[in-house]
Amino acid sequence: MLQPSKRVQQTKESYIRNILKVIQQPGMLSLAGGLPDASRFPLAMLEQAAIELAKQPSIYQYGATEGLTELREWLLNHQALAEDVIVTSGSQQALDLIARCYLNPGDRVLCETPSYLGALQIFDLAEAQTLAVRSEQDGPDVDDLEKVLASTPIKLFYAVPDFQNPSGRSWSLSKRKAVAELLAKYKVAFVEDAPYRELRFEGESLPTVTELCAGEAFFLGSFSKIATPSLRVGYVMASKDLLGPLKKVKQASDLHSALPMQKMLLSTVSHPDFTRHLEQLTAHYCLRRDALVAALDKHLAHYLDFEIPQGGMFIWCRLKHHQAYQIAAAALEQKVAVVPGDEFWPAKLKVDYQAIRLNFTSLEPKQLEQAVIGLAKVMQQINT
Ligand code: PMP
Image 1 (cartoon, rainbow, N blue to C red):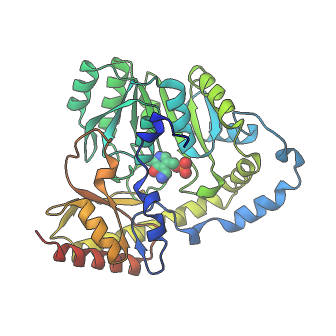
Image 2: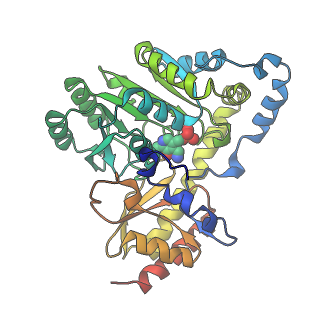
Image 3: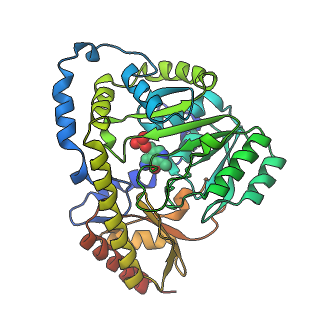
């Protein structure tokens, strides 16, 4: 039988994909995925945008690899973070293109622990060596970061400085500045992945690390969490020099992202009602975060510790007594799904502590409490 390449064989499948069938069973309460609340998709704006597509037949023709000009112009005006932009099929594709374009097998990539598992998978597929820097509540441990950068040649540092997946953490301004300085000092390129940046419930918005970086940086944006994920529209901003080779890889990969989706997305995000949609969405998610926090305080304070995120979609819980895989498996039997923290560590590195990731955007407040009660039952039963 035809064998997949070694690269593919050594890449782990995603835990969530593997349990998807179980999660989709009726009655399952899933805190596992990273799904936006579908009842909050901006359907009226999307409907209007879809109707308007017919007025522009050229939208159904092949298009430019770098994306729809109007959308690229809007992005560069809206967020003047870099010289140029390529529209991608979700920010996931931007990550994949960067890895394929810039990483040779064996090159070292640095990430935080825990880290986004979709990025870890991509670095494995690129046959890179993934190293980690310790992460604290307000960003990476800067001393640890300098130690790694000074002792090892690193090609890219990948991080999610705003409401990270899975930890929910955001970097403080001082950490953003310190990291930007260190990256410039050691000439390491930064990959800033920011799909949750606009989902801020409270506190002040901070500058991107890309803005603060004197050296090379890629900024990855996404509309999946603020509009809808299925249009698959994201983007990568950087200097023309950095994006040139990336465009070549995208051309070889899929020629270009779907133009009707780019146009629909542009019509939606530039619609006068979109700002209100975003305000309502963040207020809605803030209520859900509060509901999950209250349920955790009420039912699970004895078994876990957590930090309250100021935005995003996740609460990261450190387990005081339990093993995460055991809890996740037993919880599935109680019809509650969670993701074990181990999944968010690079495969070859030791997991520092036991944790689970809980999503608060896709269940209603009552269901969130029900799920937490289910988890509490499991933890009591497996009490060690
Ligand atoms: N980066 C992070 C940190 C994510 O959590 C996700 C999606 N869960 C992505 C990138 C990919 O998002 P998309 O491709 O939908 O833009």
